[in-house]
Length: 278
Image (cartoon, rainbow, N blue to C red; front, side, top):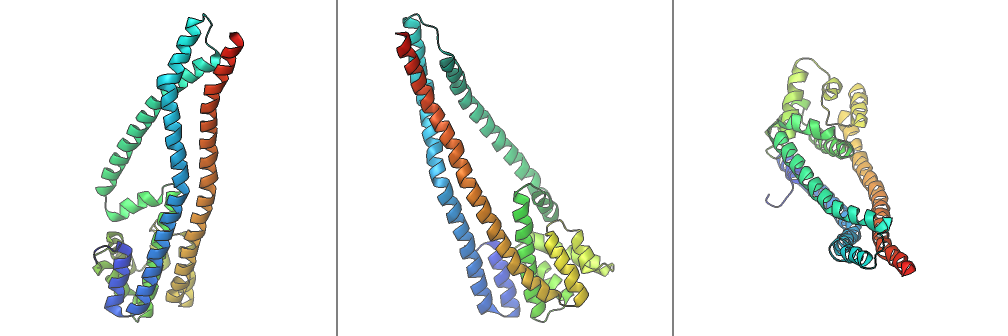
């Protein structure tokens, strides 16, 4: 299954083992199309802000390398003191490149160390850390809750027992996290824990899934409850993404607009001030 993401491979693996290949292909295609649409939407939102960032970097470089030094020389040649705007702008535009370089190096170093540290941990510990991150943790939890509830519901509805369903998670070769979840849940259930209390110990699932699990375990319709939740979870992910996208674009435009306008004011205001002194 070269070229397919791991979640699609896992879903098709389950379908191949226990039937429903037609509906599984259709659902997997829908999910892949949904993810592609989200990527395209994010790229479309970031294209124009990226252009503005590059424009601001270009304007800053021109100011720092050419305009501000010549204005300083001009003030000195006519024997006039530099305006506070020129002094502030000169300091700011000399500091900004160094700040961005240091920030970029720090972020790159932190990301590298963070990634290396995560890769040394087990899948359970790795995704526990990622699920606790602000903002991103919402997506990790909902994504894993969606995958687990969808696959578990499909397997249980195909006639497998709960233990067979967990063994299928353990046997699949595509997602190490779900292999470990299957092993962990099997061990806890053998100790006499309920499904709900076992899932409480796993920080990768949403509170809604835990409540659904508790309710489904009580009324004996766990597979139906999980099937319903998987559809709700996908809709919640899409709604949250839409809200973030709608918030992100105007914020980026506002910040970059202020930066670009400020750069042009730095160019124009000293010129007007210089004309008044001549």
